[in-house]
Image (cartoon, rainbow, N blue to C red; front, top):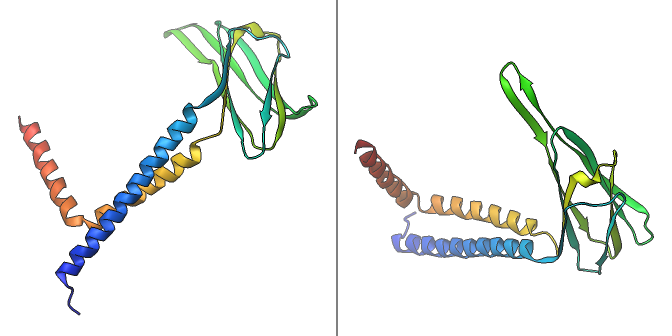
Amino acid sequence: MKINPKQKIKDIFFYNNLILIISIFCFACFITYFNIESQKLNEKTYSQIKENSIYGPIVVKRGHPKICEIKSSMHGNNRNVYFSGEVLDEDKETLYEFGKELWHEDGYDSEGYWSESDRNMSAKLSFTEPGTYYIQFNTENKRMKLIQLQIIVKKGSGLPHLIVGFYSLIFAILCFVILNKKWVCEELEKLNDWLEEISDD
């Protein structure tokens, strides 16, 4: 069976156009991801928080989920604090908890000064079911004044768009390399020659 060169060129042109469309779709996914991640419904920063302080309400309507990102950091040396929170329903009943121990230690030994720490905590809370929610913050050892807190409420997460865009882009690149193997090899050889010229200089 003879292969018509013109038909082969026509097929490669068609598939390259298809790859181009997939690539445009990938970048659209990336733009959507950054757009969703940048849309903040509410943002608050607290330099200090009180024991059992409550943030809210977070009202979720059907079909409009929200993401609440909690960022906390501890200041002070040679200290530790267990920072935790609880997600409450509209009756102020606990739905689930989250938390982490934050700490800092430093000192001197035979090798000189040393310092170790884990000062930061980040948690993303997803609210998908309709309802009213609150977040209550606690600590184990009454050191809330050591905690700085940032609360960001967003419309949702752009992560699914990022994942779809990433895998689609990988697929498009692989298809392009397979369909244009000769051209890719020639370009790689040119690049290799150019790198050799630079190294010789």
